[in-house]
Amino acid sequence: ADLSAGKVEVSYKTNVPVKLGEGRLNENIIIPAAFERGLHTLKQFSEELKKQGVEMLKATATSAVRSAINGADFVKAVKESTGIDIEVISGEQEAAYIFKGVQATGVLKNTSLVMDIGGGSTEFIICKPDEVLWKKSYNVGAARLMQAYFNSDPISKEDQSAINQHLTNLLADLKLACKQYQPTVLVGSAGAFETFAEMLNPGLDLKNLATTPIDYAGYRQLAETLINSNHEERAQMKGLIPLRVDMIVMASLLTNYVLEAMDLKNIQLSTYDLKMGILYSFLPLPPALDSRKGSI
Image (cartoon, rainbow, N blue to C red; front, side, top):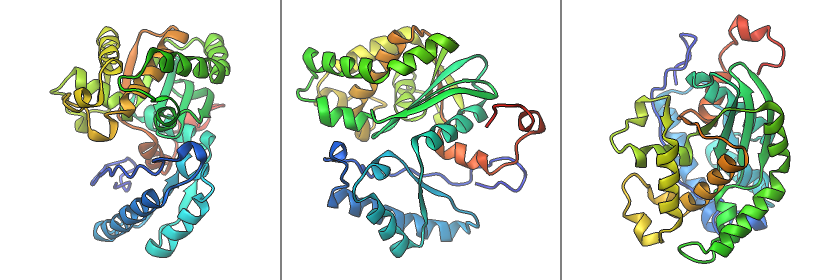
């Protein structure tokens, strides 16, 4: 991205599903195949960085690396083979960057609950347009849930119940925070929420959209279809990329739980997430935000 004009102008963007958490994410191990995929992809990225003439680089690693026993080995291997320095950021830092990305879309109008579903973790931020009120990262990403609970396809009622009980135990403090701050809208940050939006609106051009509403009733019907379908049926659905064919079931169950437990019926998509938040963090804060207590 070009930041020279004091704003973020994206000139090139790509996304490669490496699946670092494949197989043994809940055992906190990056398996050899995933390790090599990550290394290979970042070697390709380093070549692209040279082509693009990048002068400033920030590489971050999140849940799959920060929780892995061999996460430091991966960071070292990347540095040795590509020259890229990876910063392993905390869940709190991750949530702060996600807020900056979502904030940049202009979607935040009222007190909102921002939700970013990753493979290894899910971040929640309760915020106003210019202020974080509460934030937390939980080790409850779609890949972790899938490895722990996806024992049948379609997923059984028993496994669904087990997931809901797990979320009830894990997200108790989120529920208390929502009761305190009373967000009125759920803002889904990229990822699975982009899939929901595209499946509900096949003609949607998300590459040129920063934010768009997601119809609540439409989403609930779609989630029910996804949860009750098997792998082969989901693989045939338009708008569902191969990476998410199975993980979208976990994302749907997680989103359903949050909507119900936090009593939210308004959903918005932010196509900006952590990556855009990092880009926007390079820019100086506007004076109005810079002087306001509690802003990021």
